[in-house]
Length: 60
Image 1 (tube, rainbow, N blue to C red):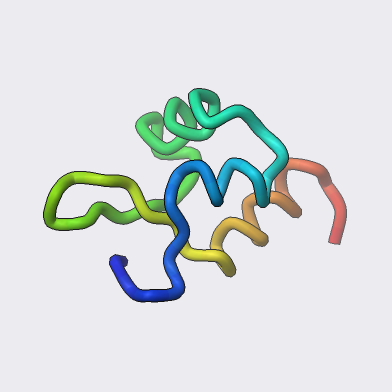
Image 2 (cartoon, rainbow, N blue to C red):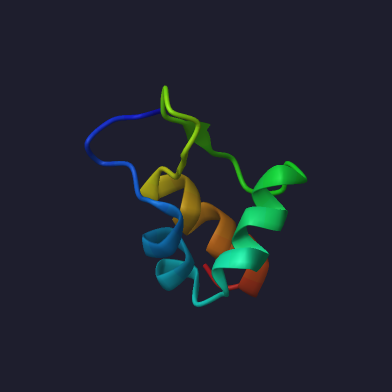
């Protein structure tokens, strides 16, 4: 998942309203789906993040 629409860690953390380090921990633990660039950097799909945010907050 390294499309143009994917978000960097800092951008994804802002969308979720969480600390960058918390998001990285969640992603490493498998709680937040993510992809990696060929260079190993995490990328997040905006739609998947929105689904995660809804589950996290319990808000549809």
